Length: 81
Image (cartoon, rainbow, N blue to C red):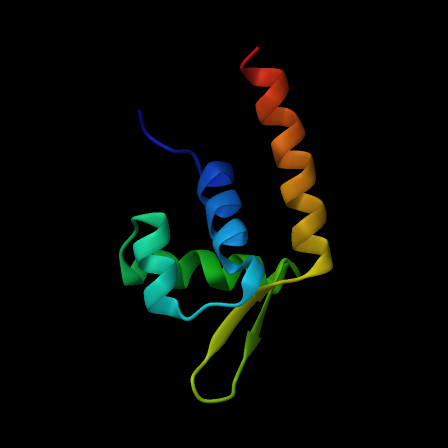
């Protein structure tokens, strides 16, 4: 079954909840670097994920991203009884 955009965003935010690098996001979400870059851009622009510019670069789910994850989990429970 194919994952939708919302599912992929949820997986990225869940993986980044403890702060991770891009390679870890790629492996944990089973996406390629190009797709992860696109999703990080969208999530970052909307305030769901923060990007630390320190070396090494880390991605961290923000409080807004955590709110998204809670809502996403609720919807997933409703979707599959």
